Image 1 (cartoon, rainbow, N blue to C red):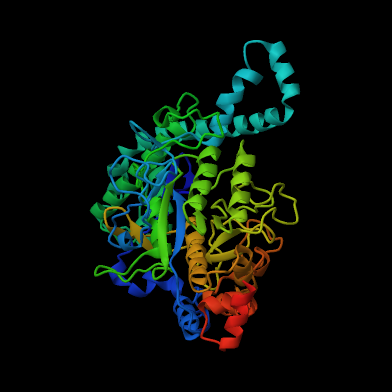
Image 2: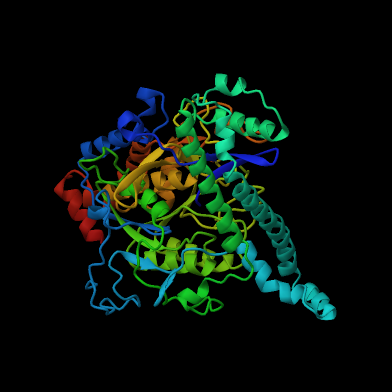
Length: 570
């Protein structure tokens, strides 16, 4: 669920706003950790991390490590902010080329990569809608019209899905090609556009002072005016602004090139790299142990939000940095994740000891969703919590599909499982609390959590701000790990209830695309942003302290007679 660019069309040209921030962390260390803040003390909707730890420790509880699986694009396992908190398979001998623990995966020390094979790793893949068109086009629009009609009638559900996918692929692939051509042609025009500033800084005053002399210069001014919305561009010298534009357009060219060459390309097939029989959904022993893969940026950032450790270079720390161990399961390429890989990744995480699974990804089509639902049900049966990002489409999930989902039909009143929590993204601005990209729904989104301007680990031992529901989900995954570390017998549904019942609510305008139910407290089940301190007290009072057998394992010492009675019952 990578949130790369927001692009607005401006008379044949584009204003590009990168979603990742280049803010210097040394300028504002308070911003680096804002999502840990106490709302009651600061009026910033953080999750109250430190007070949660203080509450749990004051109760005499002793934490146990919790394994959190990050199903993503890969993780830099030797990052100095993560290395000490990476899960290590206790029964596997590193580098001996053997499956020491007999789990079917050789040398899976820190996890597994379902996007690799003997000869390499998948970096790019098609979108699911592209794969649907490729698979069904010969059946529904082949050379034999009689057979086409027969297949359309016999496979009506598949045909409806095919037509929906075809419509999107046709439109989006054309847009991608056109945009790539526009950017390619326009890159050479950047010096001429910047020259209109006459060497002056890029400011609103200087842009408004430009007097275009022909139609092309009119277009240049429109593009320059679009960048007045970009705070990172304002105030730059003419040369700095030129370099900034060139980098922006370089990113855009790469973005649309990837869409054209891979995402919407019906002839591209990454699965030859993996070497599995993709149509065999029961197959699960494939892949390799290349934990980071070709691009571990997204997964590394997610992992740091959960369990990043402060070091000499930064004060950044993950929500569960004291108690969580990260298992990395590479599941998501640059493109759409595949249902078979998602299902196998969930089962791998469950079978190898993960108690929480973070899934910061999503897609609009899921042809083998039943296989994923089976894996989610498997996780529930094993007592494993699944945390899923709501998506970055600024859509109502009651109208927009975002798979995987815990609702088998969009109009279902309840989830078909009790171990699945869906997370929307909030901001550090109490007046504009919903992140403007976050999906929402009063029934299908459970809670909101900080997901904008989140500072965390990225590859090459670096750190950066990012935004997305991809960042909000690991905030909840980390918070869940804290609760489970101190109260290990909590069930997934109890953790979810603790967050939903104790969220810090707000009635501010949610700034939805529609004015219907346009209050923040109406766009999720919780009606607000999670508060870990409140959730800890709720869970302790309602689930942990209330259970004698549980409390006796990890609570302050009680009377001997009570302890004997509990042991006798066992």
